[in-house]
Image (cartoon, rainbow, N blue to C red; front, side, top):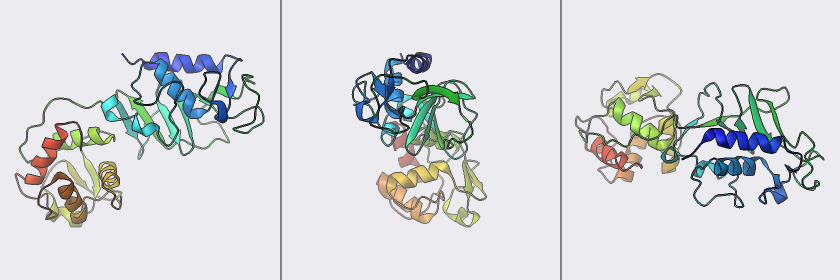
Length: 266
């Protein structure tokens, strides 16, 4: 069974062991690590399912999202980051780390030359792989957090009733790997005619992380707004008539969505 404590403790142990160092060009033998191989090996040590990735074949900062999914028990936070918890996977473009506490992280950062390649193997200087403050001065902020078991997918079956309520939206959010609060927020009020009147839709500004995730998957403009063009793209994806409306009660589009979500996918 996956154990995030085992993963964190392993990574901290590597940071405290001077026989390890940083080397992006020699990151997968268990001697040296770069940022993503440290996280990958730690999760592997913790018993997490990583698909094709494993010790000796680590993911990168650009591919790790393929295994940190709701199906594997991870929730992704991106729009509004929560207070960091021990075991969170922290990410920004080009770098990743593991939270040791709400204030500290463990990371593989750079070699003794201040570069990512060309250093001496297995010569931990104390700063190559280390524990530091998350918000230490001079460091770039992280923009994404993955948290284990914060929102694993509910495996119970949705009622296929065609009603676009908070339960359906929450399941959709879980499947898409965004915060599962059952609400599609920040919607343009001019699109009300295309929606069912539902407590699951809140009007305002800023768009929805769920809708952006869906739009990204469908390859359309990701503005976070559930407008007629996005609804048509969803309908085409689900194989129903693409009229741009969620408005009917019960809606065939929502029934098709509920059936798809009952398979654990979108």
